[in-house]
Image (cartoon, rainbow, N blue to C red; front, side):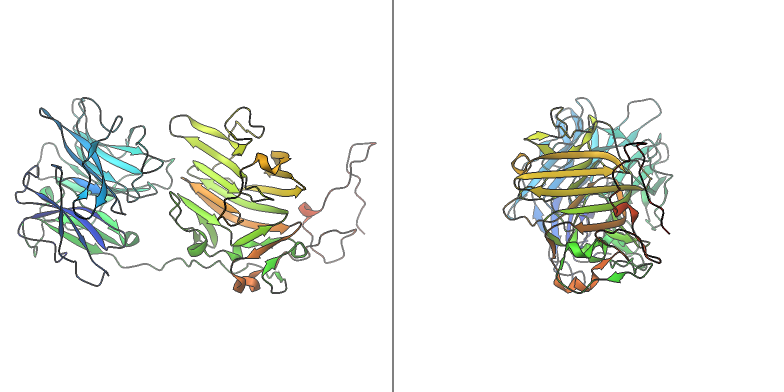
Length: 536
């Protein structure tokens, strides 16, 4: 039981931050009430090992006990009546000042609230971008179901309503938790006929393109389940290793208390890159990559804890799964190199579950073009690919010369992207291929492309939003200039391909050469075939 918070009254959990240092909860004196006379509180502590400080009471704004707060404590979503005749709706408020807490809530517009619909029990993801709502279903034989809404940023409205068919039943479905990646949901189902029959279930899926599978029991003793899950709770914390919930269990302090349950930690996957599967020919230790190094495996330089920092909606770090680098939902990866000069980049990857946005930032000369592999909109769907902006025209503009209208990514299939970025005088050239097929081939003044921000580093950056991306290989080859290491101590990690050379006239016995890196000879004019001399 969570000390310093529970009293003889009923404490209902609204949210717990992932670091377990901030909690919002609602306190009511009478169970099964709408919260009249209840109070909203926030409680903090400095460390998980320390006790909670005394709760601070906040203005509850006439909200009912079923509410939710984002992980950063900046946004509150609650339910209350929309008018004197009743009809609950979902309201949202923003944290404004410590003295009173949240500002006056505003009723969320359509589609979250319909004109005649009844909506309550909101459940927001920790990042505030996904909302689950308990919605009244007027169809005969059906009671309350769960609907999902998404938005691209916390200052944007929630978009189209999505009915989660595999989660909903003819009984009363109540949402409690949804993860940031939208791959895990905790909800309860309550029998419309038997008031004491209630079950808490966990639903998962492998990607957002799939439906949720069959729910499985949460596996926590809840005591009087009818009252334990009437309002809410079940918030994951500590990376999913702790769950806080509202329960009526022996040993509690009052009508209903806030409890925490922890599971034994499993062995974590190392964030360090895997060892090479074959020995590589190490280049001389130095603080930069030069043309003489040939193709360099830059994955060895990546530290996901440092190189995939939180940046706006891109808040999740990369990880290593079975030795391969994975970029998940809302992950940005900045290669730890300052690129000055011409270069080639080769990436071998697999995507699944999307992605909704997949960008590669390619700094060259005084420009920083964004190569778009996929972009989509909640309402329109797929928008296109190409260079994001040319002459101020977005890639989806028909006048953008690099627009690719048809999707080019293939889910669950290994693909190879090659990009060459070069400059001469004021002219910039961007050439890219995907699986050997032409993608972008553009040459023009650097001023026609987006410039490099004043405080920005000249880094190659991969940004992934929704869906998953697994990088099987990531190699960089400098054609001119150099790429300086942000962490000079990583110089010993610079490795190049065995037998990699800049040019050759013949292949020696026992020498391995990447034939993709050898420029083909000119076609023979007589038969239009490549005139290749045999190797003796």
